[in-house]
Length: 193
Image 1: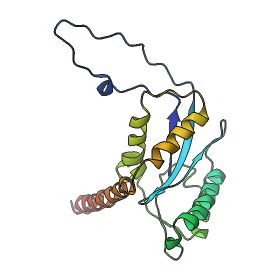
Image 2: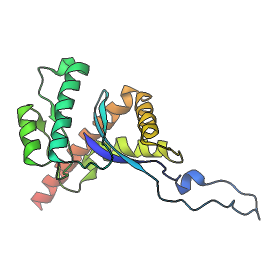
Image 3: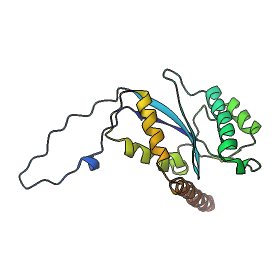
Image 4: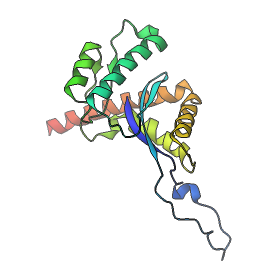
């Protein structure tokens, strides 16, 4: 589970705007991108089978330990409904190092739910599947789209994830396994030197 900001407008990248021009032809004028009028914080819980749930934080609220612990309760309930085969298995849980994620209330909640927390070194996006796989693809898909309300952002985000196959999610998790093994090998090499 991880969070990302989704803006009402994200300009297209220079690569997306690239076009072939005839010799002597000038580039068309484009308006300078302006800051997005609004944004929504989406907390997304997912696994190798897909999105378990998305929570959109209310405007003016912040992610606190209490809020995040309530998301863990919701994750537990949704996992029981959507992934009943996991009911008797130990859940391996991965999260970032944000202060709310590491708060005492969250650590107690993870212990209460019997989730095994995977370690995550600080400032290490290579081991955060949401950062290297899930969010970049979502942001590329949203580039150039303009939304007038948070509800439009939420609907478009939900539609994006509903359109993805299970293979998309399982590939992101498989990449985590490969990256994890490389990091362990590098750490062992580093410690030997």
